[in-house]
Length: 164
Image (cartoon, rainbow, N blue to C red; front, top):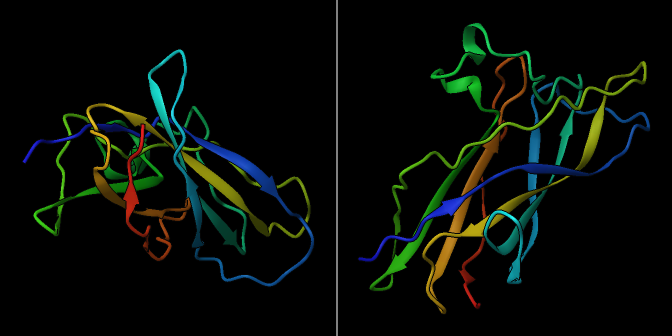
């Protein structure tokens, strides 16, 4: 099996709604869709992004650049707050692809300035080409973690056919 390489370089906050709603303090995520469109960037050929919605009742999502000690220190699991696994179809079966680098990432502190602390919004995870072939079939599994180390559920994308 030829191994593709994927780089999740950032998470972008697309929207955040601060109206009062009751959400659990544990983050929750929901797959919203993906867009795979090739275009050139300064870093690589982009294949697009995967979008997911999120909620968090106490608003403790995201890390500050200075959050690099204890559980958040480099080399520790929670140095990241977005966890991504990548699967590629080979012979009709999806197999996890081990990449040379981690696909996990950090997204910035999203704590609202409002008094109620709830968060609701969307994020997009960038997907970049590192060896995909046209018509490769892939899927991604991801979850997020808040600063209290509460894990969200895991979302799994449907099959994505790479076309570039």
